[in-house]
Length: 117
Image (cartoon, rainbow, N blue to C red; front, side):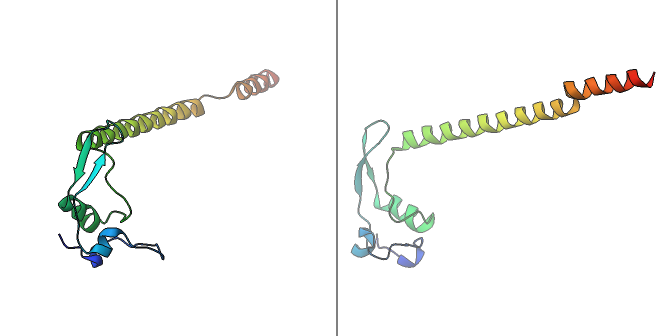
C-alpha cells in the first residue's frame, strides 16, 4: 500500500523520517505482544489506517495483540470509573462536612449563648 505523506500526522523530527515514508509504501511488520508474549503481525492495511486515518504518531508501532489491547482498554475504563467514583464520594463527604460546624465553632456558639443569659 502506498503512503500518502499529506495525510500523516506532523512529524517534528528535523533529522529523520520514518522508514515507511522513505520507502513509500507499507509492509507487514512482525511484533511480539508486550503483555502475553504472543507473536503477531501488524498488517500494511492496519498501519495505513493508524498513520493516515487516525493520524497516529509516525514513530509508533504495534505493541499489543488484539486481545491484550481490548483487556488494556477495559482496565483503563475500570480505573477511570473507580477514580470518578472516588472523586464523587470525596466531594459528597466534603459537602456533608461543610454543613456541620466544626467543633470550635460549636464551642464558640455555646459560649455566646451562655454569655447572653
